[in-house]
Length: 291
Image (tube, rainbow, N blue to C red; front, side, top):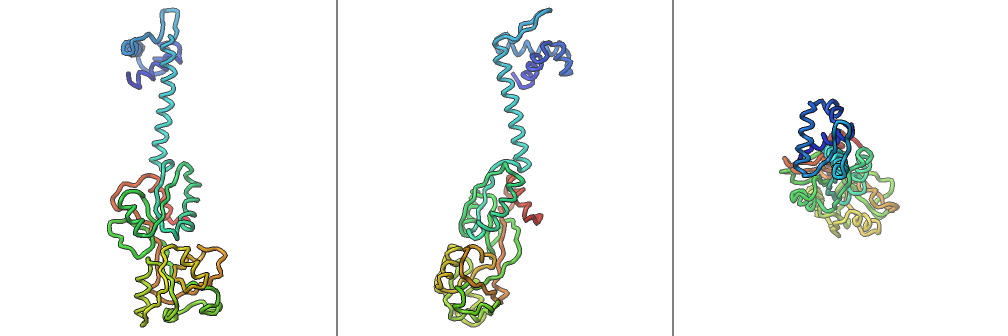
């Protein structure tokens, strides 16, 4: 029994006549009759009672008819789902992101992406850049969102616009509110709050300016570093696009006039590894410059 025989059988039942069914299917009547007999012989039951004046489906034929209709519907649904996956319209997209991007860049992209592809579901994992790289390497996620600098060997990447580092402090503790920009030398002797991710860059920039930075605390969590600064515990050195992560904070942000203290958001994936259609469509948002 094959799918073609079942299709023939359904058409015979639908037309109520082998002659009409053969014309509809564009095949010879003897061949269609032979296919029906072969199906009956294989199943060991009579599917249709027929003579020169009478054509009637049997109880076994009715059962097969119902099952055939279900199978054809399932086949149609399966083909549609496979096409949707091919076109990026269905499936699950697994993304890893550093926490600073989860509520900003990623959320905005996911919202726009979901509007276009409502059949996609998401599996989002957060961690630091090292965590994201491991998740990618282990195949747990398909796309990672990280911050430079990073060793990108073995990865494909798209980098977004550079973001300068800023000094975040509670209002008027160290600088007047009218001051918009500071030199890196003005960080000397200030208690600095840094993330381990950018510690080395900040230390090198300070040493190049002729002083050793006073790193009061290293904090891994993005929001925590700004919360500590908001409590007056020190000067948080963060990328400028982090400034909205702690709402209603009494923080002042000063641009740091230091060309080496810049960072970019990177969208990365494993080089030469298969990407699902949803992942490819999501990357198009960045490749084509969609917002």
